[in-house]
Amino acid sequence: MSAAQILCLGEPLVEFNQTPEGQFAMGFGGDVSNVAISAARHGANAGLITRVGTDPFGAALCGLWTDEGVSTANVTEAQGEETGVYFVTHDTDGHHFTYRRTGSAASHLAPDDLPRDALQSCPMFYASGISLAVSDSMRAAVVAAAEATRTAGGVFAFDPNLRVALWPLEVAREVTHSVMAACDIALPGLDDARQLTGLQPPEEIVRFYHDLGPRIVALTLGADGVLISVDGDMRTLPGHRVDAKDATGAGDCFNGAFLANLLDTQDPFAAAEHANMAAAISTTGYGAVAPIPTVSHTRSALNAAWQS
Image (cartoon, rainbow, N blue to C red):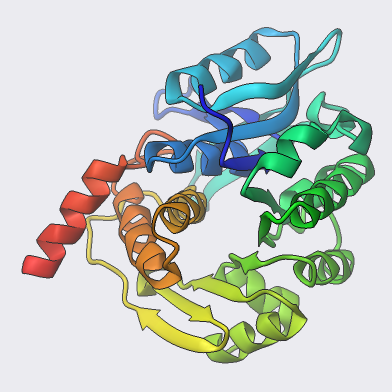
């Protein structure tokens, strides 16, 4: 496999989703894993920086990445440690998440575990707010990896991906803003950004993030599309009308497709248009991974939309 063009750092998870019969079906989650898979399906050489346990769940994740063409060269199998898992249950109030990730193998990732040579030769590094919230050591690893990548001339892409179950909003706001100030590409979602910035209008949120530092801001708007801005040149791309069933992982799909297409075209607006369609397609199936389209699927759907 060729050297990774995008390295993603964070915690992968195994999912157990409750079926209508009450049983649990195993699947996969973890935002950075989803992003890496989306990037790979959209033509990029993507890889992960993480740790998994020497248990059946870690093995299953490694098998998934191998099948998807995602590099595991920088995935450590930690002897005697466990891979994080979560459960999805359903009732009349919707779906609920229960996590079993405290002390997971990934949470022990630290700056000393980083593949410095790989980061210094990689064009793009990606992490999220969840990567920052998992543990203090992983947070330090994200900061060190971003610095290593940017010092060598690469770019740092960051999604503040807020999870208040992992840390208080006030802490999340302070830390994610400081990391955002050191990134080149900001990939916030509208709901998260409103909580983190205290602002409501999408245009004000984009300007806020530009002021922190990123040259490119792609603010995803859910079914309403994306507001993409490069050096303050803002363009709204409307959402695509699809038979949406499940929006789980749509933002991750967008991020991976956007970064892969940006590497290919060097055109942020074209990349946003491509990723906007990919994310819409991903909502037409269930789960975070299975519905992520391939690059050919996304291009065909875009061509059909342009001709209609």
